[in-house]
Length: 224
Image (cartoon, rainbow, N blue to C red; front, side, top):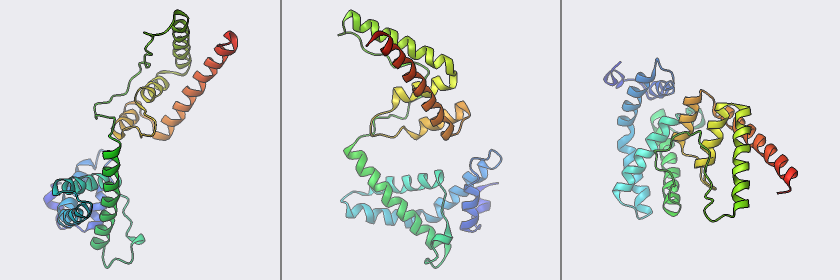
């Protein structure tokens, strides 16, 4: 189906197609529907974003970026529900209001990113390699302890399996305090491991608990 064939479809139908984006049989149709959806609402959204940004003393480039981020957010989470916006006179008006709300939240994200730059580049990949500790300035005894605990972690992960290892190592390598893991990385984990996000979190907890168990036994045994 060409996107041209969808130009006269109702907005409700377009959104329904967009919601099928994860079904391999409907991905192309969902993409075409999203293209039509963007054409239909881009003028009003761009105008609104420029007003929002002007009020915050941002230029048109930032406004256009904000509009793009708003559409990208809608593509990922097409959860619009007209029944929750019955005060709007029609569906298109309700969608405009919904997009304006997303744009306002995305602007807050932009402001936060200025104060707290994103530490991720977009090139991050899942890994099964443990984070290496710099032992340059350690004593011989400290290096020995690090080496032994490194082996304990490896042994604990070996007891659980390769998926636990990838999940634990990826989070250990990339997770930063106060910053969410980049979405592209969590999506790669779900796709590569064929797991839901809930299962990934469960496996991560299992791995963390098993490693803590091994470390605690070591500490009790050697009084470290």
